[in-house]
Image (cartoon, rainbow, N blue to C red; front, side, top):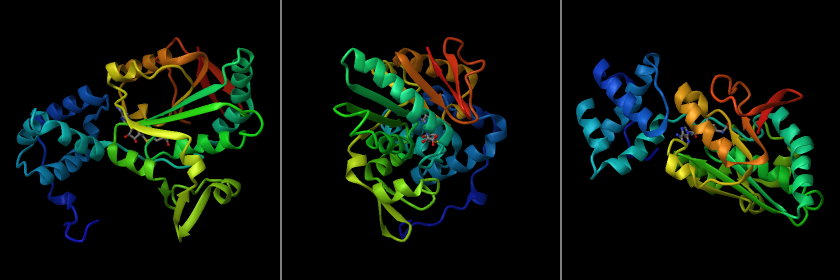
Length: 290
Ligand SMILES: C[S@@+](CC[C@H](N)C(=O)[O-])C[C@H]1O[C@@H](n2cnc3c(N)ncnc32)[C@H](O)[C@@H]1O
């Protein structure tokens, strides 16, 4: 926090009426698919209060006008989305999934693509937050660089709606909390602990992944995300309602190669969301393919 910044006092947040809550909740939903149930009213109230303080808006109705105005809305919307998204993540978050990727799904896809001489692998971390998921994949693939993936082109794309976390991803500097699940082997090989609790990712890992802003709820932009072998969208759709989940998952379906795999988070499933994807089980979890 900058020294001249006053700490935010959630108790003094302006109270939101039901009408204003519904109006702003619906606006956010229509923009990005994130749905705030009425039980989350106070969460939204406190996050909005920060933006009202930042913009000088005195009432929620003023703020609603401000964030939708052609002159101020675009940059304000980005700040609002930075406030309301939950960005919790870490390296090596889902070990059963990563083991299955490394030992089963990756060799399978490499064999299929190798047969037709197409040595390029495309991976998408959708809702990448600060990059830990994408870089975990990069480290796992780097380990295969001299063997299974010799002469292969690897493209890892991380996307998120939140500009602040994307900037952190591009920087590649992490704290102890982010690396808490990282096996020692990877920690020693691919990070430099520059100061206690400051872990700097090695350039060879950073080189494999690029990060860009993408709203998964934006149909036009989603059409450009083509031909992925693996898509990860973990712990993102939990913030969506069923209808926005279905819309986004249909894009993943369309953007996945015919033999590719789609992974969600440990406690998530596509039950009631999409019936085109087939479930594929592995020890400790499951994934989806076409
Ligand atoms: C809890 S993090 C998950 C990070 C990572 N996938 C993992 O499992 O560790 C959820 C991320 O989804 C992003 N997100 C939420 N709604 C989004 C949307 N409509 N488009 C793109 N990203 C979104 C948030 O900004 C946040 O960084």
